[in-house]
Structure formats: structure tokens, C-alpha cells
Image (cartoon, rainbow, N blue to C red; front, side):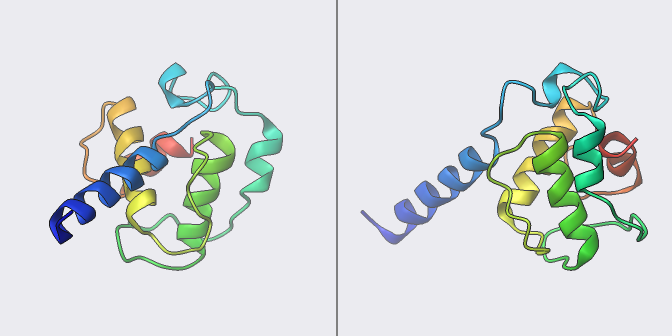
Length: 118
């Protein structure tokens, strides 16, 4: 295998892992209640900070909140809650943006926050 092949294979594996979801994923609807989310899941992701624009390379509690929502509310199973916006988080955000008919940018802007966190 060449270095490029290994990198491409690893990248595909990361994206595939990010998109591994339970049956109650976001394709069902745009609201947490309709997608199987319960009040308990929202309580697991409590956050009092602002919903600033997040993208690859962003860090902090806002990113950790986003990652918690992706895991606990929308049932992505491989998004790490590290507070670092990395490839798996970006791929998950892009997937949700497609589901919500938003521009697929991988950036969590005002419109994406509104869809993720009504």
C-alpha cells in the first residue's frame, strides 16, 4: 500500500465511523422528540454558554456541548466528547446538515444550531 492509499482508507474509515448511528437517528425528523430523543438526553447536554460558530479546529465547552448533542440526542455513536472539533465531529455535522436540508459546510452556524438545538 502507498502512503496515499493508507491515508484515503483511514479517512474513509473515519467518516464511516462518524456516520454509524442507531435506528433513531436524525433522518426520522428535525425535532428531538420525533427522532426518539427524550428530556433525559437533553439534560445530559446542559450548557449555559453561547452558541457560537464552531468548525474544524474549534475547542472548548461549546464543542463539548455539540458533541454531547450529537451523541445523546441524535444517537451518533462514535463522536468523541473531547471538546475538540475534529474530523468525526465535522462528518457528523455534515450528515445532519444534509438531513436537515441545510448547506453542507461542516460548520455549526446559527442555522445549524437552530436545527440541532431547537
